[in-house]
Amino acid sequence: MQLPSTMQRATLIRRYKRFLADVRLNDGSELTVHCANTGAMTGLTDPGNPVWIWRSDNEKRKLPWSLEFVEMPGGLVGINTARPNQLVAEALKEGAIPALADWPDFQAEVRYGEKSRIDFLLRGPDRPDCYVEVKNVHYSRQTGLAEFPDSPTTRGARHLNEMARMCEAGHRAVTIYVVQRTDCHTFTLCRDNDPEYVRAFAHAREAGVTALAFGCDITPTHLRLSRPLSIQMPTG
Image (cartoon, rainbow, N blue to C red; front, side, top):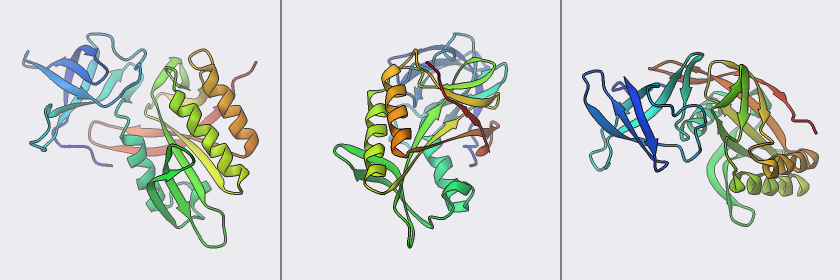
């Protein structure tokens, strides 16, 4: 995925009200930018952190600039929660996810279950439908280890339960954790942040839901789904 050509480096002043961040440009001027992330962004919001922002050409936007990356010692960290779905869609079109390559057709944002939408519904001849949920991951507090979630997600647990029911009905279901970091090689679930999500995950796995985790190649100009990451299940 090629990123906007308007991407430029700035310094974080503060992140607030979930969707807003103030940054300082290299010339000393300050901007309020849109932050496309409703999570806690734990460990990424310290004032003074270098960040990367870009300007939209959509004249109807109230805030033309958006926050895309936080620059950490291990590399760039993507915080835009829209990117993982875009990356997975790109990979599905290219057949770049071997575990899902047998389904030739997919549709995004399909209603299913009671009150949910699945990120991607995969279909193919002579095979059950495959329900694919995508999660953005940027939380890391131990070198090399990415964790999800960084804050409680009732919605995430509900999606796991819905996917478990799809497996019980004879379909396939896959959760893809997209780690928007270049400094992690292992992924795990964060029990102390959200024990209910971990319990829902265990139930979903018993029902047949598969988990995949991928890292990303990240530069200020390009973002791409890359290597699969090993998954370390929480114990206890």
